[in-house]
Image 1 (cartoon, rainbow, N blue to C red):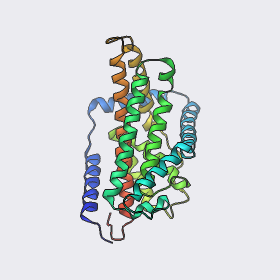
Image 2: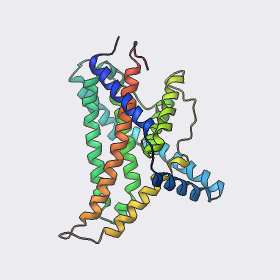
Image 3: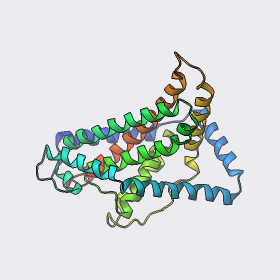
Length: 280
């Protein structure tokens, strides 16, 4: 069936966002910073570089599987289906959510997005108190929050992330979303190419490596955040380290905002591409 007016509007918004991504021009500072980080990382022995990327990839795979198989995620899936039944009472499984209209799916997805942005804000605030335990668990916690958000957005648009293709895709969506804006176009283009060239939605036949040197800024930013929190945690306002808490909360919120924005656009586009008369 042809796209409805609302679907055409959503598609136009995504295409405008893609154009902005293509037109983005980094400033000299960003280019210098990227070059410095990459050159510094390349000074490490090649074996150490490979081990670093392998460890991060493995960690993300395990986190993804742990989240997907958790009771918390099963409960969230049921809540999404229950929300969908408000609009279509015969929904039985995740794939049935594709029967809903785009505005109905947007409503359900935005509930998930708002909830996870709040989780991220709260987690950042807790880490911002500067406690060693809370600060040390900040990176795993924020990774779990964002990976979970991507999975739930996918489910909202009728996509289970338990097949090899969908698992790799959700991880690559997360990876692309956490890249700096100047590098996101390459990741987004790769996602689009894999979508166009796939034989089916079960087996994954692309590059199974997720993390590479372009992602090196993200862990550096997290370490810098931890350093700034440590420096400001003793700056109290009425006995509360508000400055460091604001830094932690703001940083984590912005990261989750980036992840959920890109993930939402990707899975909306997947939904629209399944329309028979959709023209990319």
